[in-house]
Length: 214
Image (cartoon, rainbow, N blue to C red):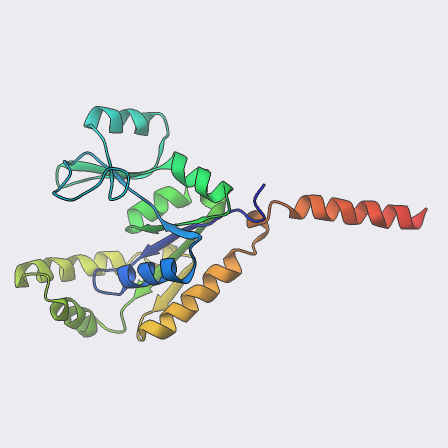
């Protein structure tokens, strides 16, 4: 049995709040943190590797997996299904590895309400201001003005669900936010639910105590 049970770490935020950057930094910080590989019914794009970028599935296989309870969360987006397979996550946390999810509030709720909910740590990232959020999207130079406008329109809906998360961080300084995030994860690893050996240890203490009293 692993010394500790792994966490399901959920990071959510509106686009541009720093979620992807912080997720990558967490992986660099600790090799026991791995990214969840999503399943999808869309066709692979050039260069994408099955099992590495996504688990590519037929719609029939995806729906069957959902019906069997094999997806921690799933959604239908732009004509395709996306989801987080449960089996690899269960195996990873049993080995003491943390699994990082870069998902929205709807996926976060599904995972939190699943039977793995007790091992979930959910964190929401807020921007310091709406103006700064727009500035970050524009400075990336990756999206058209129309795409940025759509992302901004969606951002408030995402922000409005901040209250359903365990922790909320205002990402006004990336390095400082990273340190706060590390502190949260370090503390969550010490939850009773994440230490499977505690019951046995307390039992041994009780036996020692009783022997000393006889």
